[in-house]
Length: 170
Image (cartoon, rainbow, N blue to C red; front, side):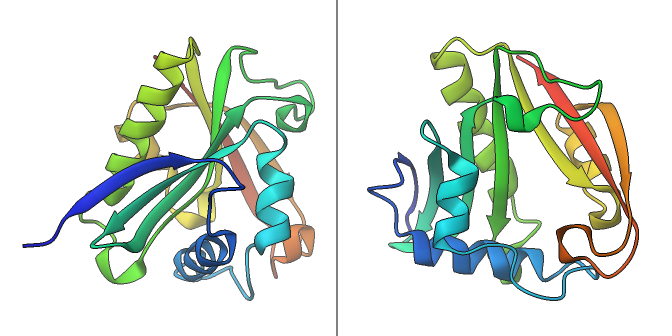
């Protein structure tokens, strides 16, 4: 019988190489991805000084991860800004061989727990329409709030893509 554990860790406690490896494998299931999404330094940059990582492990093996941090100026896009009391949720990844088995929902529940425990009123995230995750997050209670269209080359992606900024009231 296997054992699944969920932990919230600081960047100093995290195995950033393992997290980056999992995020990259998870993102590669999307047809637009042509290379790595991040690395250890990129994780630290996106997490910022207040970021932490949710890690889901099965028998000590990393199978899911996400980053949470208070929203900041990097989350403002044009005339859109998430609520200042939101917790940002990003860099979510699940081991591709076990996607669609509830690990993503486990990550979201833990992010919601952390947000509520810390007095945040919303979770905020963004995803690409081309990743087909907007409907998934909508089923989890997120509302689409703002769209942006980017030309090929943005984020190193090979074609035009649309980003959806979403929020979930808690």
